Length: 153
Image 1 (tube, rainbow, N blue to C red):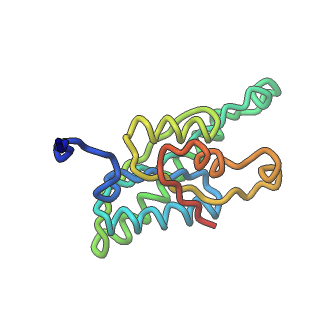
Image 2: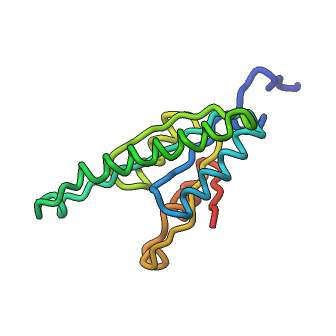
C-alpha cells in the first residue's frame, strides 16, 4: 500500500515564499536586510522587514521619551528602506513589507515569523558583548528550530 502525499503542502520545500528579516538600525541588521533582499529577489519571495520596538519600562519610569525614540527609529528605518528600494527599482524588483512590533526582539521576530508564515528568518549577528553569556536573538531563533535561520555578520 502506498500513500499519496502529493496533495500535502510543506512550507519551504519549493524555496522560500516569505523571508523575514529583523532590523534595528545596527550595521549588522542593515547588512542582513541587504542579504535578505537579495534572497527575496532571486527567489521571488516577499521580504518582510521587521523592527521590534523595545519596551523599556525602566527608561520610561525615569521620564525618558522611550516610545518616541523607538517610533523615530522605526520611521527612520522605513525611510531608509524606501529610499534604498527606490534607488534599485529599475534594476531589481523586490516585494517588501515593513512591520513593527513592541517587545523583546526574540519574541517579536517569532511572532512576525509565525504571523507571516515565514519560510526563512535572517538576522544580523549581535553586536553586544553580553550576548556571549545570555545568548543572542540569532542563537535563540536557531534553537527554536522552527525556520531556517541565516545570521549575517
